[in-house]
Length: 222
Length: 227
Image (cartoon, rainbow over all chains, first blue to last red; front, side):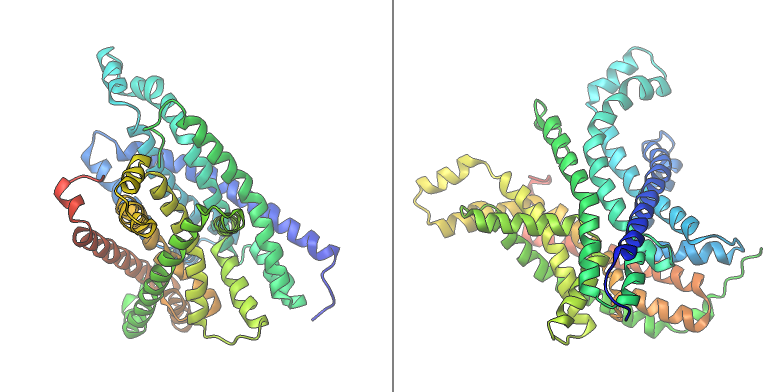
């Protein structure tokens, strides 16, 4: 119960917003690297690798992120590792993002037209060469709009890191609210801040999708 | 640095876990039904000739889709309270989840509407069907049939997202877990059990929607392929 919203509170919220962006970048890079491995594993010629990566994706996609965050937070502590809430949140988000990005990218790799695979094989390229030189460059084009779209999900999902005590935008809002107790105003500001971060990405993703839609009407991912 | 797990100590609380799982399913069921109706209305509204209605629906969809559910839940929770409405946490949770999933449903349904070939609507007009008949038989039902898989995976995601309602003390599965772990000091075991329960719930939901799809869309079953 301490006075009104002032510039110091807003500065604090701004700092939280920077951490939201930081955590999102960590999740995107970590999840991107692991997700790329997952995507390749999902179409591996080895059946055991395909099954293992499929099970991973099913397990993560069947569990709420909130529970994964708690598992990361308490799980790392249970095996005796003392980790900061940033490490726990970053690791949990990485595992979570990897499962979704892996599935998105697998779909993109597989939607490269079949003749491209066959032509590359006909040119006696090895599997690695085929992937790097023929398939992936085309898959990246297809994958860009849904990946940008998924970045919106990542930013929104970092708000859950507040429950393991990581001070990002949501948590800093809760802290400010604890001293001012004007929840409606403060959460409206927080919502507006998230919107300001996410909406440009949403628009960009839609624009990319429309651009790709031209000339290849049936190929654009739904 | 040794990991010692004691599952029996946590598993003896199984009635609480079961109660939480049931409440999670109830939350998901209410929000799915209301959200599907609300979202379909918003999708219809977005195609409205009145720019005011179309604009309002667009603002609603974009505002919800670009802000976190956690923030939305707090806004609904404190917003309703500041209006003087004293509602249970369960009601607030259903309201917030409905508003949230409605926006996603609206976007999916809009894609379904846009996929209806123009010629079919013109053909229906040529056959002198009323506007209502056209909307129901030519636009709405085929659109739902077409986007059914996308809709159902959105509803499964909604069930998982309902875990966030633990933050306003709705006594669903995650809230039960938070309580049990603070009582038993067995956090890791508790959340492993809860994760397994959520996986089971999502498998059950997916199987249920798959079976429902077979009953609702016999045409799809006969063709053996999506439309």
